Every structure is written in structure tokens, then in C-alpha cells.
Image 1 (spheres, one colour):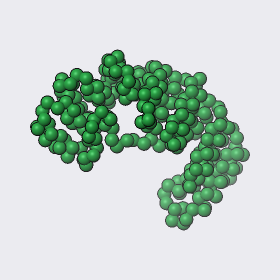
Image 2: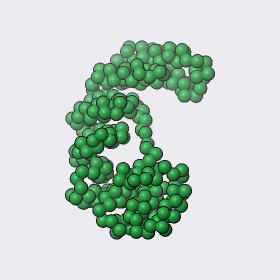
Image 3: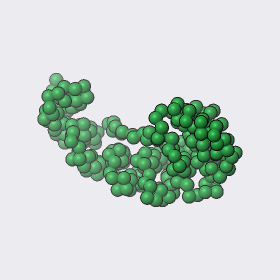
Length: 282
């Protein structure tokens, strides 16, 4: 059984500490030109080097980014956002221990920076220290305050707990539910909860959640197919067959133009193949 998760990737990843968001300018090249001019006018402004370093980091120009960020720290050693950006570069280049050490050094001085806990959690998780990573996410969430974490933060914590073993799945689901309550019930969090509950055999609970997704959706066919897959994998073929047939019925209610697009045709073929498999029809 394969459960498809849709991850939302934020387009702007700059820190709140930067007063003017770089993403306000269209295109990374134009942002660099703009910041070059500002730095020429104010060469001792550490925040400008931080902003330009962030743009270089987003553009994956690691050496240029590191040069700017290190210069920002030379001008202002308390500019923790530059340390966080350097740790993100370490993560991108698989220097996991370096990222962890850099963030630990920051947190020893400023334990109130949520982003530092998040970045260290990512390093710890990739180092295989899954429960320590989950604990760092817990601390970060407490520090976010009114500024809510992003859905991917909750997903990352859940994945850390998932990697720690099945006995931690219930805690992962609880954390996803906290995120759903705080963020307005993002579908990605509910889908991950469905997957985790399925992995530990709590099929009926997973079905309740999947049915909630289906009821909220204007297009039900793909969720009904997923319901069928879940039931089939759980050894409940009759209920699975009903779900697949309901999916086909839902497709038939779509306008003709939508019924004939590639995505819907793929879903129809998937459901039809499942019906043939379960009924023995050729």
C-alpha cells in the first residue's frame, strides 16, 4: 500500500530577524544586485551581509553564502541568524555533526531561538538520534508562540518518532493532531497520521481519518481508492471492493471533460484493476 503525501515547500525561508524580507524582490539575481548596492553604501552593516548570504544560500552558491555569513559574524558576533544559515549550509552538504555543533553553540547562548532548535533537530534526526530530534522539535514548538510552526515542522517531528520505532507512533500521531488543531487541519498532517496508524495496525482509526479527508474533499475518487488499498492490505476484501466501486461511481459523476483527463483515467484504471483482482473477473 502506498500513501501519497503532498509536502508544501515554502518559497521564502528568511528569518524574522531580518527586517526587510529578501523575498520581497523578484528574482535572486536582482536581489543580489540590489544588496550589492546597499553593501557598497554601508559596508559595515552586518545585516546586509546576512541578507545577501541568505540569497546565495537559497541559490545554492555555498561558497559565496558562507563568505557573506562569516563576514556578517565578524562584524556582529551576536548575529545568530548567520550561524543558523551556516548550519543549514552544513546540512545541505551533509556535514551533520558540524550543523549540530554549530546549533548547540548557539543554543548554549540563546536557548530562546526556535529556528535553532529546528535546525539542530534536523541534524540529530539525520544522525540517527531520532528521540533527541523529537525533543528538540518539542522545545521549538513551545518557543514559536503566536507564530505557529509550519506543517513541515510537524511532519518532520512525526517522521523522527516514526524512525524511532513503532512504539513511538502513537506519540507521533498525537503531535500531528496538535499541529492540525493549531494550523487549521492541513491535509498532509492527517494523511501522515493515517499512514502511522496503519503501520501499527490501528486500521479502524486510520479509516475514520481517511473518511474525514474524503468528506472534506470535493473530489472523492482518489481517497476512496486509498480507502480500498488500506482495506485490501488489512485483509478486508469485501469492504475494499465496495470502496473501489464507490470510486468508480464518483468518477462517473464528474463532467465529461474531467472524466477524460489523464489523471482521472489513471485513477479509473487503478480502481478497475482492483475490482477485477478482487472479483476474479478477466
